Length: 305
Image (cartoon, rainbow, N blue to C red):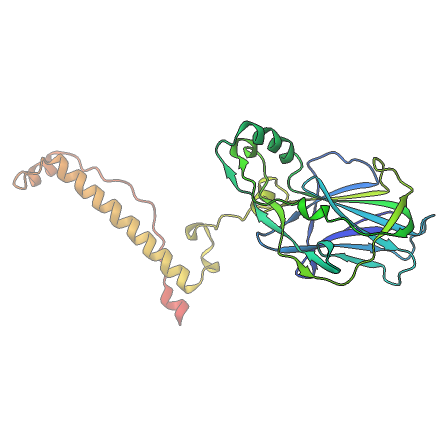
């Protein structure tokens, strides 16, 4: 969990904060900007949680949290110093339509691709891919002004149908993109005009989350890969279960049978396939046998007893 100037922001799935991995790939951008990696799964809805610590003091009566998904601004939400609650849950893009409020929940979707889109799409996608896979929350101090009506513009900013050129995705660890579900009825929202103390180019704090699949995070060496199991023949005998010992015995027997069968075929090939001459050839020629490794016989009956 990252805390900047007594403000914390996390990404929640199924009511739990996602585990965050330190960004060891990029250079730190300063004390007011923090980046973390998170592991996500296809189809999972997520929410943005913002917490304001009680010790937070500032010459402002509200904080504006601007939400950027895959590099695009989509919405914002406010914390008011007059509110009793210091925790805010942003659960999706909200809008007022015909005197009713609706929210479109956010979710992680797979990236789809195609071999060769048209040239115009390729140029547009090239710019979009650079910001793909990110959730950014920029915090601005502000002074609350009059109440206003919210625009419907935000609803049109998320597109999960576009197929990206495979060439643009090569060599990248991108695995998902953000989409939204069907609109759901929501509680009435109050929307205010805010006079920002901080400039748009110099936010009070920036929280950025690079979301990736588990496989992508393993590729980035941010989480360890699953170790390969140690073969039974390399493990100490005392650590094997009865079933594992039986399996090991069968494997060793099979190896011996294969080697003996191969040796027999070699002797038959050297005799020319003539059974009458085989004894004479075997007496005249020195016997050559493949040297076998020592076989450890394991008495599994004792274990069962």
